[in-house]
Length: 265
Image (cartoon, rainbow, N blue to C red; front, side, top):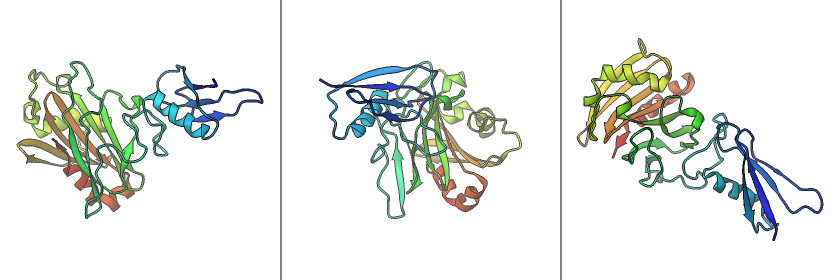
């Protein structure tokens, strides 16, 4: 039986090479993440000649346990779930062309010490926004659970982090009020989002309540970013919507609506 060897190297892009005459193997290199150099070999038996290229790529993605698709400029990075076809958790457009994303109940996750299932969250985005792979290299002290983007309009990400990493709260029923008032929260957690001190950058702040849960909402500049913060279970949720200057000017209303739509369900 013919066999195909798939070689995975995190520092290489997708590559399929044809063998010399007489050989029966195909070799594919797929970048799965930005992890340290580590090659992993997987044997896939019985790949037929017809559609071999397609089968190789599909097998490679399955072996990585992730999609290898992503937007240009965001890199080829590992992500939870498959991006091919309809994105899990994303609804069809409504009458206004907006989609609702709800984190699937069975999506893997759970960051930090004291793992527990993540209470799902939801938000709305205009049609044309899509999930972007989350790289291990993104973490940098935060726990980014999800990324979405539209190359012409902006991008967003969701940080879901254990409350105990930031607070002395020991119960599993945290609220944003228990963590602190809006000023304390943005001062403490704003740097988790923008990577620098937020002093002098907070243009506005507001508090809203939905289904008994309190949300703190902030607008910062620079950089241009909306941040929505809340807590549920033993998790802190930070929802960030950002864009460059031109995108911010053209799509400010939609970006603000995205930020204000965030809910923990």
